[in-house]
Length: 464
Image 1 (cartoon, helix red, strand yellow):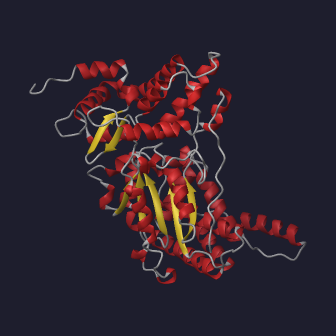
Image 2 (image 1 turned 30 degrees about the vertical axis):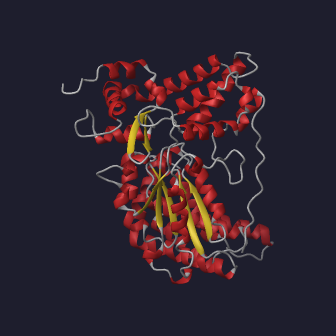
């Protein structure tokens, strides 16, 4: 079945300050959005091509005779705001002829604090049962009902209340001639709703499901196998591709539990999957590549080389990203765009935030265009935001950051720990770059802070 590329989403660059909020909204771009700029012009982003190639390698395998080891499990890591979700949406579009894609997004803060594999599998079952039903090709009612009842019974969720509600709904729709079609999906939805509620109930559900991990995987795979057969019968791509997005927001301990401690269970799931992951999961001693061999890193765009000199291909790309959102003529001086690009550190989200903030400040100052004062104020506000993030551990963080900026490396002779590096990578105070070699640097707005500059001056001289 062929899928034509979607029409371009006609988002024109803002030509008035009041239009800038619409073009700088901090949301991932949909496939076809004119604001999208390919990173290939400035970065060695072969990893994005390799990721697609890895998925295409399994397309020719018979979907109904897959072994557990044939299902690809990919980890896609990178800094928050680097553009991972936008790239994943493009993958869904580009591979739509070969895969039936299920996109799950972890957006609720209370779940981020204690998400685990059992909740992922519950979310997946509920999503796929409803998605195929909504697409007009429902999975076998008996199987969905069996899986839904299993989740409800194992988590001690009240089945009778949901069944009574389903019965009343069916009677109303059928005028008396009814069945309990959809009960299984409703039960999955009920368990999911309870898991999203109180922390106490969510932990109860997790604990109960974890105690039946073997059964859990078997039930999930039964549903996934039937979903695959349903897709085949309806002439749709038989390969399921599950994208679990926003796992890069997981904290250190939660991320390690998910990706390390339960990786064996995740690899048993009968579907191909892409999991986003925090950038710090690539660090030893965990080093996610030792657990998931198919691991890819979303690059940060370099505005500067390791020695601090401008990196023109990266700057050109950041200029394009800005120009797709705001007409350059809306700046009083083109060098102001350079200032914002450098201040972003190559983080796309921070660049978009800076541009939007500068436009808002210019409007507040009743200026017709974005001027130097507006740009400097926007940079200052982002700097203060990072300073607040660092404030609780300022005495240890700033010397650590100064040493990173000085050496562009992290080593055993450095003050601080690997956990400090993880924390500062996760909040993007430290950014990871590549140009043949891996190196680190401090976010440019932090380097403008007095606390950082004082710490940098206090660095010991070599040999001290």
